[in-house]
Length: 201
Image 1: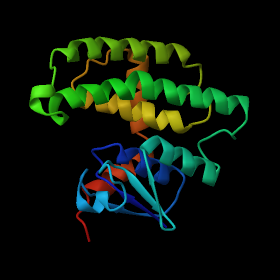
Image 2: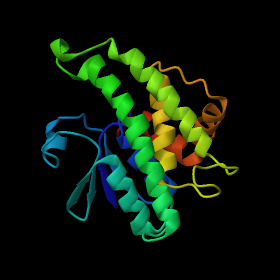
Image 3: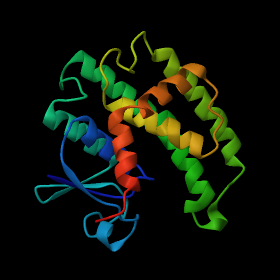
């Protein structure tokens, strides 16, 4: 059984979602970033952390791709052309969407107040909208980024879509809105939210 450390209002949600999608059991410790429970396994204090047989893995994308490869689910095999295309989508979402949202968060409440530049957020919102349009242009006829099969970048992209909405970024592309809503309606995602809302036992 895996142990996942980090609250569901962080990128930890991506790991929990992946585990639900692939049907793996896990324990969840909703520890806050930079808490002692997190620093015991990740000196940076960042979440998520995945504990697997005594080993601590960090970074949400690295973790979910590891799980996908290990369980041969939600991924194309390494060394295949489809995997190269999948990885290209993963890096696009990380570079052009996740990084923009993270920069906005840093200048909203993470950096020391004297280091924040609130005026940058208008530019970031424009850049995010542009990235959404570019991502949608890569969507084919299938329901997922890679066509008929859900893969790792779908979890990251849908999480970014929901993150943007919660951060009050204007998300106006109808195809992207529909894509995110379909992804967030998946039973695995709903189970993560239900488990996160349940009292600890």
